Amino acid sequence: MALLGHRVVHTELMIPAPPAAIWAVLTDPPGYAEWNPIFVHVEGTYAEGATMRYRMRDHTGKESDVTSSVLRFEPESELRQFGGIRGVLTFEHQWLLDAMDGGTRVTQHEEYRGIGVWFWDSSWVEPAYARANEALRERMARLEAARR
View 1: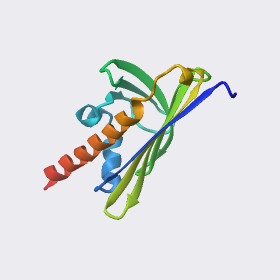
View 2: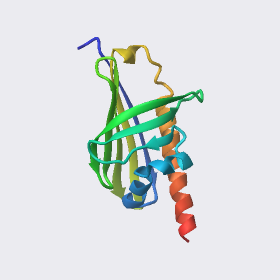
View 3: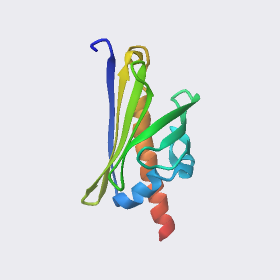
């Protein structure tokens, strides 16, 4: 087990919007193309046990297809997904929403495991997820402005 790699990516951001509004954006697969710079196309319906298909754009602009299973679906609170090949390279990704004074703390937390961790340069992922959080905040601001 010591030979299997482990890496963690973690980003947080406060967004001045309630969890329900953010959750509606996070669980709208067609809407990802309008705001998310990493997951540019999403197919599926978010629900526990569901399979989701993503078109992911990396830091070089290269796109690849990723499939995940929804492990946990707690409305307005947590969306947890798992994918990859066990022992080789897996990921467990979480969107966490925590209501705070003035808005919601949005967290993306992802853990990678497997021998592939030792050979994959994941240094681009955390900055990319931070950009996705910023893009989500901008999306929420545009939606709020459109409601006014």
